[in-house]
Amino acid sequence: MMFKGTQSVPPGEFSKRIAAAGGRENAFTSRDYTAYFQQMQKDRLELSMQLEADRMAHLVISDELFAKEVQVVMEERRLRTDDQPQSVVYERLMATAYQVHPYRRPVIGWMDDLQNMTAQDARDWYSRWYAPNNAILVVAGDVKADEVIALAKKHFGPLPARALPERKPQTEPAQIGEKRIVVKAPAQVPYLLMAWHAPALKDWEKDAEPYALQILAGVLSGNDSARLQKSLVKTQQIAVNASAGYDAVARGPILFMIDATPSAGKSVAALEKAIRAEISRIQREGISEAELARVKAQVIAADVYQRDSLFYQAMQLGDYAIAGLPPAALAGRVDKLRAVTAAEVQAVAKKWLQDERLSVAELDPQPLNAQVRRAAVPGVRHAN
Image (tube, rainbow, N blue to C red):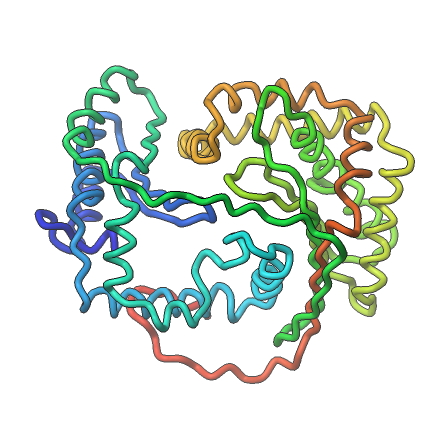
C-alpha cells in the first residue's frame, strides 16, 4: 500500500518517478522491520528522500485498493509458503520453537490474518508506527555525510514525531525440553529441520559466543570441505544436501539451524542420527587449528566480498541499527571473527547444541495430487 499513492503523488506514480530518474526501488518486510529502498545515482538522492518523506506522513489507504492488494498478498502466501513444503515446515517449526515471542508468527501472516484484515487495520498500523522518530535512514554510496544530513533535515525534519506505543518486554521463556513435530504435506521427498535456541549479539565488544557460533556454522556447512557436506553427502551419502545457519543480529531471540534432505532410500531418522554424530564429534573432540584457520578465512572472505555491494552495505548497517548495535559493531566484526579460538567453538557447541534447547521438524511427504489451477491475481507472477 505504500506504493499506492499519497495526497500529492497519485497511485503508481512513486515507481514511475524513480524509474524516470534511472533508479530502481522495492520494499520487503523482515521479522524486525519493513525496509523501503531505492538504488539510483547520487545526484538524484533528494528525489528519493522527498518521495520517502511524503509517503511516511501522507499515505492514502483506500478501501478499494486495499481489497485488491490483500488478495495479491494472499496469493503470494499460497505461492511462497502453502505450495512449498519446506516453507511450510519452516513456518511450523518457528511456531513450535518460539512459545510466546512474536517471531512465532510468519512475517506474511497466517492466511486467516489476511482474510480478516481490513483497510482500517492498515490505516491504524500506519498511524501508529510510521513516524520519523520510529525510522532509520541509511544512505550508502559516494556521498558526503553533511550533504546527506542536510537533505534528511530538509525533508524529514518538518514531519512531526508521534507518541509511539510502549514496547513491553517479550522475553522468550527458556525451553525446558526437546520439541518435535511432523508436518504432513504434498511433497516428493522428506526434509529435516533442526533448531536450537542460541544467543543474539547484544554487547558487541564483550560478547564472544555469537562470533564463535558463526564460525561453528562455517565448520558444519558452507563449502565442499565442511563437515556436513563432506561426511553426510560425500562419504556416507545419506543426504543430498545439508547446511547450517546462524545470524546473530536481531532484536529478538535467535536460532541456530540445520536443515537436510535425505538421499533416496534413506530415512529422516537415520539422517538426524548422522547429524547428531557430527555435532557430538565437535563437542567431544573440538576442531583443529588448521580447520579453524580455513573456516575463518572462508567466513571472513564471504563477509568482506558481500561488502562490495553498496546495497548489502546499507542492509548490514540497517540490520545492526535496528538491533540496537552501533556502526562500530559492524566495523569490528571481522576482527572479532579472527579472534575466535578452537576452544571457543567447541565450548559453544557443547553449551548451545543441547536437546533441551532443540526443536525438530520432519516433513512426511504426502501424495502429489493434481493442483487445482487458481485464477490469476493481478500483480502476482505464477510459476509454470
